[in-house]
Length: 419
Image 1 (cartoon, helix red, strand yellow):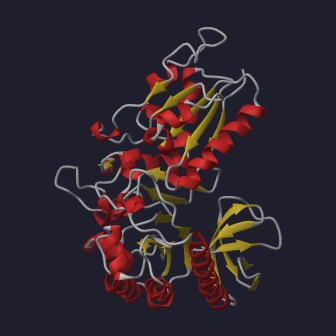
Image 2 (cartoon, one colour):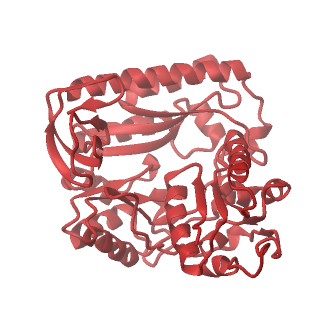
Image 3 (cartoon, helix red, strand yellow):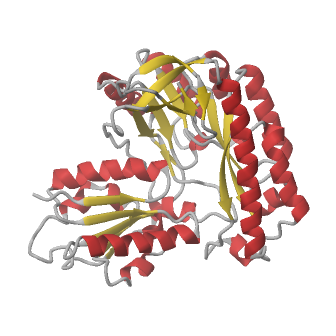
């Protein structure tokens, strides 16, 4: 039996769902196929998806090629038109056991004999299943607690790939985390598309902070809990309390900021202004001294002037950011921003480079400050791991994967710490 070949593009949630698909495919007995889980966040992401499909088709001649993920959901016709593609499956369909059971061999061209496109209206999906997987590797597990998004930022196609916001009930989340801890995982990361909207569709409308507190209380053997990217304007009181009082909640937050200029934020249809972001970081730092922040920032959004861009550049210092994820603006067909006056390509590229340089300066300050400190490091591979602050560490000798070790930081190479 030849297991399917899986390829994942894009976010951690996609990576999580690929693991779930592997289990669904194995349970159904699917073999010999190529499965590409695509991303739609930018036009470049779609281009890379096509490139990956062609590469895998060349490397696996004769294998049926199944395309799924956000790009498959938002533009199925694009992938259905590719000669290499056998079947296109939507984001909801890819998580259904029946979908994979329908791909069980019935003949040499079994997948090709079914309808080529299986993509339904994602907006009609009302529930998110708590897909029980055993995590990634042997060190860190990711748990999907939410999917979809109710907001409509003008640059973003993702709600049309993921649907409206749906939450996994707290009891299901807690049970999965217990299972992962029993299997030896020392760190769990909560993931979702719009994580701070968790609970709005559940009875009683609980908030993300309620879920975090419940996990920490009901799974006392869990050493480390992280939350992935959040919208800081939606951070609730209980979440702030958890940041202040729960040492097992890791002191690292990745913020969906996108810009540092109020006019651009309004044109993006974001729910926060520049001062809101700065105030959140100041408050969180008071509650948890030493907490570090990462952030997504887009360079060259339509209508962005040099002065507006400078406000985004200054936000790195004003918020005290440490890790930057810089996106050069890329127009997505079907979004309002794609119809706005565009910034010239060379200017977008130059601004993205300046933002990355600013981010490197911020990272260097953090690395310098860490030298000489003792840190609890989760070992991710024999020679690498991450601190509580999600800072990468290299070791001078092999360490047991999955363990948490207290190590002294001896230096850095400009990107990673040494211990």
